[in-house]
View (spheres, rainbow, N blue to C red):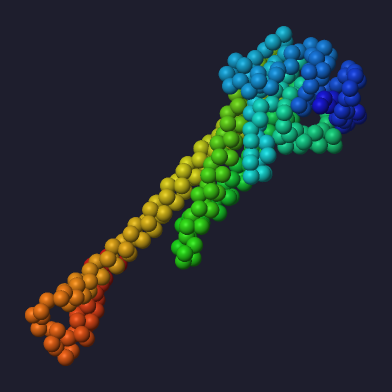
Length: 325
């Protein structure tokens, strides 16, 4: 689908193109979503730039993601998508800055595009250009990553309280541990995807900063680029902090599981040791020897029972005295 954005007064209005419809000359932003071959050719003819394929956008080399060709600047970044769902993904998005026009190519619906679209539909400057739209998109992308990290941080704090909670329901620890491990795994995966996105955005912003002289950025845009670089760096540092926190909680969780398993094994060991003396007494008096004086005692049976009970209590009291229980 091809949507073009044209300035109408103080708003940037979207206009989805129908099949065979010409691209307006006044189009500032051309947004390609799952483009067809015909739409690619139509944009190439109007703007004079080559539209990268989906396979080319997925290349990880810097030279394949950030380059200049025929005066147009090609920039591909990895953006977060579906981050509010149980299955967040990253998707490559290409930004092509050709003169005063911006062309975006994507195969998913990252939320920053909708945020920028709604913002520019309410108000935009009269001298808006493709560069302005690009800056708005990058600003929305960085803000969105910051929101995701804030949510992850709050959820990690909740998990931390569960991990170090003193009271646990008897018999339900395994389910609690399983839920905590699953939650930490999901947050670690989401954090790694945000880190991947921030790295690509940081490279894109650095590329733009180095190209500011040839692109003739305004003073305000150069200052905005520097601010974006600082924001990306601070968010990357915060991502590292969250990653370390998640790793610490995973280690602590595995340590607690190991302690609980050791307690269970210790309990079985103590029970086995406590029952060993009574077993020995019962075994002795279960022998079928002819000459056993106790067999003729009137109180031989209760005496054997008392001996078994006492032989079980004494090891237990000894373990308690040694503080092994």
